[in-house]
Image (cartoon, rainbow over all chains, first blue to last red; front, side, top):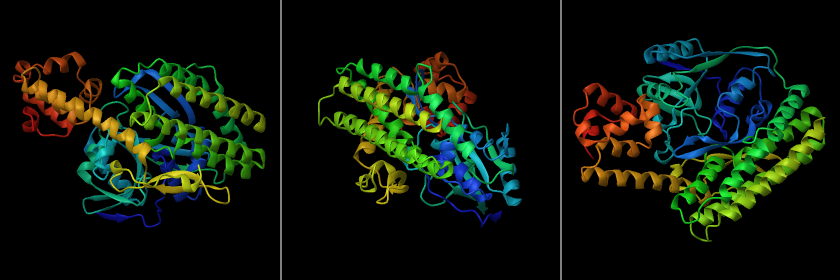
Length: 331
Length: 131
């Protein structure tokens, strides 16, 4: 089978889901940036989930859970998304081919471990990796994976395996495409309500979410036993979630700063530009934390969990005052 | 972060790919900057890989000592742990733990072996022994 949707343009992005959302909307005549998709869906967050274990460590997330961005596009753009999952892998692949033949680009969810074009050292069992299929040549699918700089290719059996990976957040062959889009520009109201939602998440009362979540993590880190070898792995785990897992650096904080710059333009609230600078500084604080942790892991300085905990408390404090000001700015 | 602070020293775990980072250009605009990665991200990825490597080798030693079955070795080798293997295979953890016993592993039905092999992306023949 040979079909290429020529009109489609690949864009490099920090994060898979916001990258897919922005490329997909741009393809359908709504030119929005990755940062806009991320901010408009109120995806920036912080969560520390001690009871969900990920490779033996608690889940630490700097954003809302998977699918939040895609679902967050529905309201601001008055759109209808078509989501479809499959029981039989063959049916899921047939349907994908069918949609490509109809000239549609198709978003799919995959398990990163099974994607052969991923660098071997990056292939972990993470099942919520999103990408866009925009064609097929012979047995190979043409893929726009937002975290890759250039479009890639994947043989059909490998892609089938990735789409039907089992385990936590199993994709079950999920594919999606927009059915209709009723609004093609970003409105100031949508931006304001998205920011409000993020403020609520970050300053909310749930002890493991937002600023309180950062504090809770800080307290946990303070209690790490420096004599236990795995304590260093704990610190490394936090940094991985922050820097390595497609965040654009600083646990999505720079990406959110980019969104605030655009938000200032759209809403005409000049203060958001200033706050974008502040967010940038908050991101720098996270980078300093990562650097400190990495130096301790490398043994360049003694491992002192208390010092790392202090830095995390500092981050909690600066995010708290940042979001309080953000709240005032859009009130 | 400014553009000149975006790590570009390279990160051996990224296989030559560049990842998108967000940084401030000279006009103060925050833009996408492709990054070759740097020491911080390399350190934490290698640390996680080392940990898996360590677990894999410990499991290998147990298999050689007759204390465990190749299933445990392959679980770590394919970057899973017990909770994850349970999730991807759909089997209870206690059942998998039981299958770590060499004498029980030796008697497993082809169907169960096939399921393990499939979820780990290896063949049944591979699964039966250490590489």
